[in-house]
Image (cartoon, rainbow, N blue to C red; front, side, top):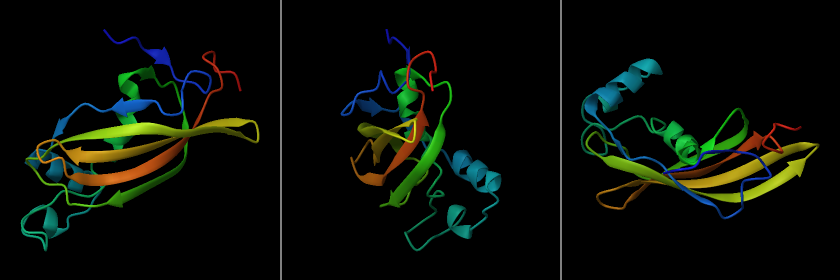
Length: 146
């Protein structure tokens, strides 16, 4: 059984690793996301230069952000910085998972931050699809001390 602690600067450790739940990209997920972001590029529904339809590159952005939720209660936070590198196209039928690691934590101007690096991979082939990192402001202690 997983014990869920409240994430905080005091609790999180540099080097700590995370793993998301797996996610099967279904054709209806690709279509729903395209409509949700109002991006109806035919590449998502027909052929593309990558050989067949692909999914929107940021469709799984939240999967990487949600990795920490598999171990921590995340009461709030502010995204200070995020970057993505899209390596291979996402496609319907892929089962994907994100893997991450706390790269740094620091205090700046009385605020506390954590930096998480991540890679999203195709579970079947092991191919890297997306990688990046995000910096998020977090509370100092478990009682949300500033």
